[in-house]
Length: 285
Image 1 (cartoon, rainbow, N blue to C red):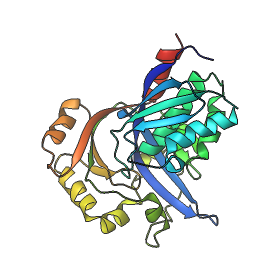
Image 2 (tube, rainbow, N blue to C red):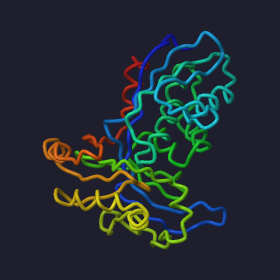
Image 3 (spheres, rainbow, N blue to C red):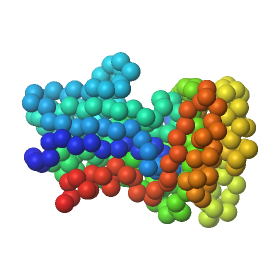
């Protein structure tokens, strides 16, 4: 068992820089292509040893029952898979919006698996953790692998990419968008051809954006407002929208002028998840 019994780790946000939906499979899942990058901003998870064998999740959990809490489900999954007798207390400090398309729940689950793999010294490989994480959600493996990547298939096939560091202003228009509702909607575009050759030479869009703008006018309003500063995009199935800049000053200027009815944050991109960086600093000394 690892001697580190109390520590905190980020559960970073992600952005989908593009999201193409290629087809709907017979099992209901969608074939897609998307480009993930991580941000140096996110939730914080505080881990501490629990004298009992129980898993206790506290903090900003919005009164979510354990059976629906991805942090709890991730901890229980690893505990059962590796037959761990110890318990753990996990306190969540929530900064990422629910239903925002920045991966908050998936990132929380991935950070839980990564952190407890270290804390409980279960010594699972990244591939093994990613396979466990896939049971919790299609986006969880990308957070576990922790590298900017293009995802194929249903999102589980990942090809690492190196991206230049950028600064982003991410805006949440205080609207919750259900991923399930978008992906089951009959009007969703599902026939974008798969990318051939270098993805950088293709027109890159978010196939969910037209539908979300129709169903959630506040998202369209946000995208239009951001256009004053730079080309605006929506991440995932929304509702968060973003603009990209070369400098922090430019991104901060957008945030400083944000309408008071919306929320937002400024963050830089990184090719390696800050959760991996922080855990390495704690455990790999």
